[in-house]
Length: 98
Image: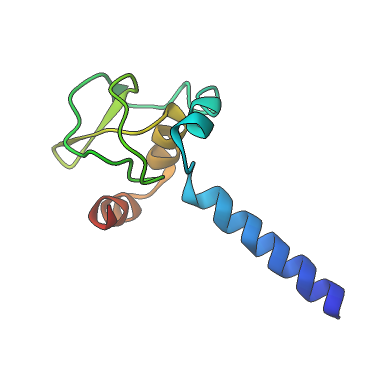
């Protein structure tokens, strides 16, 4: 029973970490291939200064996404792909919390 609890705790921890996004720009740069085909992305001036997924500074080199009339910037393309995978309600919550 104890080992099953540990396995469950480890699984939940890993799941939570994978949902929070990258924690620094260098790590995010490594996930660019993951989000290289992020949909509905364009280059533009972002209305936010921090990435809604990771909390890291927005990079001017990364594509932006239009959401509810705003241009949303990210620290990396991987975070842009994660944002695009969210529901509109989740996107709004991410933007409100950053």
